[in-house]
Image (cartoon, rainbow, N blue to C red):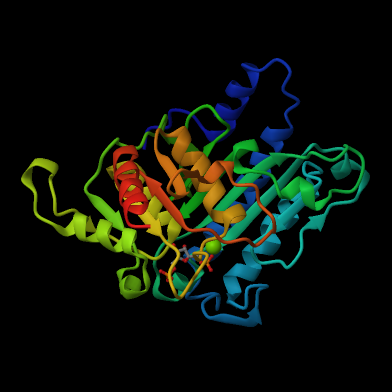
Amino acid sequence: MTITKTLGEFIIEKQAEYPDATGELSAIFAALRLAAKIVHREINKAGLANFSGSAGSENIQGETQQKLDVYANDRFKAALSARGVVCGLASEEDDEYVRFDDSLNQQSKYVVLIDPVDGSSNIDVNVSVGTIFSVYRRVSEIGTPVESEDFLQPGIAQAAAGYVIYGSSTMLVFSTGNGVHGFTYDSSLGIFCLSHPNMTFPDHGQIYSVNEGNYVHFHDGVKQYIKYCQVEDKKTDRPYSSRYIGSLVSDFHRNLIMGGIFLYPASSLHPLGKLRLLYECNPMAFLAEQAGGVAISGPDARVLDINPTELHQRVPFFVGSKHMVKKLERFLREFS
Ligand code: AHM
Ligand code: MG
C-alpha cells in the first residue's frame, strides 16, 4: 500500500484548520487508536489466545458477555482514562457510566460512549466485529464530576463518532462533522493510513440487510418493504440482494461502500428494536448523515433528533442510502 497520509498526520492537519482547537479531540483519537490496535492484535489471535467463548457473565441487558467484550471494554477505558482527555465514559458493557475523577480528566470537556465489541457473538466463528464510539462535549460544568445529562444528549450534539472494523483488514472510519474518512491499519508498520477519504453513501443501492428470520414478527410496513425489495422490476434494478452479517459495523460498512439499506426494526420479539440508541444507532446515524445517507427510527423520526431518556435505551433503526431509506419511510407511513 502506498502511504498517502497517516491518521496522526491527518488529525494534525485538520487541527491546524481550527486555530481555537485545544488538541483534546486529537488526544481522544490517539487513545482510541491505541486501544483499537491492541484489540486488533487480540482479535487476530482470538482462537489461539483463548479469547473465544463467553466470559461467564452478563451485561446490564442480560446478554452473555464474550471474553473479548470484557477485554476490549477494559482496554478502551484504560487508554482513555490514562491520557486525562475525557471526564467520563459510558459503555454498552457497563451498567452505569464511569466518572474519571482525577484532576486532569475532570478538566476535560468531553465524554465518550462506546460499544467495545459490537457483534461479539460472531467472534467464535471468525466473522468481522467492530468497535463503535461517540464523543460529546459535556453539558455540566467543567471541573465538576460528570452527570447523566452529559451522556443523555441527542445524537445531533455529537462532536465526533466512528467505528473500527476488524475485518479482512482493520479500518478506522470516523467523522468530526466534516465528512467521513476511512483509515486502513498497516499492522507491519503499526499505523492507520488514509485509504478512504470523503466516504459517501451512494444515493441508491441494490442491497437490503435485515434479519429475515424475524420476518413474521415485523410490523406490516417493514414486511411490505421487504417484499418490495424482492419483487422483480428492471427499471429499479430489483430484486435487490439480501446481505446480512449480523454485525452492525460490517453490514453498515459494506452498505456505505456499495449502497444499501440496513434495518433493525421493532418486532413482537423486540418491541423497541434491539440496537442501542447511544452506543450503536447515534454514532452510525451521525456517520450516515455525514456521508450523505439517512438514518431514521420510524416515519419522520430522525435518529439524531431523539432525546435519550436512559443509557441503554433501544430504538428501531433504519439506515443507509438516501433514496432507499426514503422509500422505506413511505412504506412505514402507509402501513403503520
Ligand atoms: P451486540 O452489541 O450484543 O453484539 O448486539 C448488536 C448486534 C449488531 O451488531 C447486529 O446488527 C445485531 O446485533 C444482530 O442481531 P440479530 O442476531 O438479532 O440479527
Ligand atoms: Mg453492540
